[in-house]
Length: 116
Image (cartoon, rainbow, N blue to C red; front, side, top):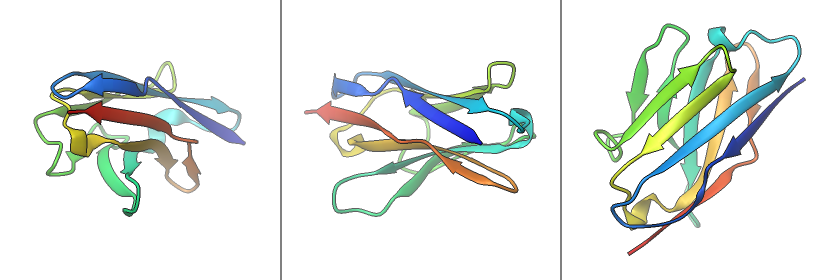
């Protein structure tokens, strides 16, 4: 079984930065072959894709975060990161990590709150 644990969330002022981490642990998986995604869900809204990183190194971003957020991964550490710069109050949400290929795994989420 695989576990994903996010960290790095918190409270930050608008214009500030945070870096989220998501570490995968367990057995029976090869991290580098999985697509890793960061999602977020704000109160009263649907969960949305923020950024993703495929096994081939292709990254994709939601239009709302392009130019501000960067997804990266360290396959040796089984970890994916989300660097978030120029944060806005509308970025406030619970951020979730997802690891998927033939199986689909989710983390428990980490709260990001951006104050105006």
